[in-house]
Image (tube, rainbow, N blue to C red):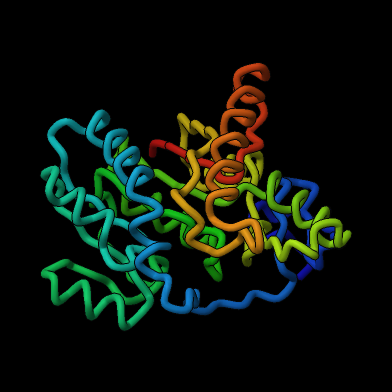
Length: 273
């Protein structure tokens, strides 16, 4: 892979974490592009619902403020439909995209409209949706740039896209510390890597290239508890306290830099077509 799959830059170099880094937009990515359904070993309910309910409520609050009359909403990576069920109760006409056959079957039994293909392969009608959401999906896609172009196409003019993504500014640095084996005796596993590992700059590059405007990126509040089991011997209580303290620190840095630096563990993006 000679060009960056996000911005087309040829300024690619290898990273010590086994990733490639694009100097053009700042995205970290694997030279090979693997794709598979994530495996959570029976923790799906914690990962998809319990830990994210506050994040879902925040996203819904943003959308309701943008569209008081509601409209059509598409959630990409809908899993068990927890977010779109909340949106449906609030008056939205909801649909979801999910690749897990098991999850789709469960969602359809609940009466939810679900698509079982990648968004870029659905060929949905242009200018169809007021809002599209994607929680931790872009990082795991096979062809993220193609997917974003499709999202732009099917949003109505002035439509809103909300994304939540892991922040490589936090995770890549943390992986570097863990690879030094300074904390190996604690069995900590807080660093996360996926097909694509975005930061503020690379997310802005991805969305601007697709045509989005009014792009706002902020630190995201963390998930509740320790759904991924990253705390090792220190346990979930330590993880919860660390998340809270780190979020406060990252927000301090964000405001002191006048919104220029986002160092939180995850990012929330709101953009308009």
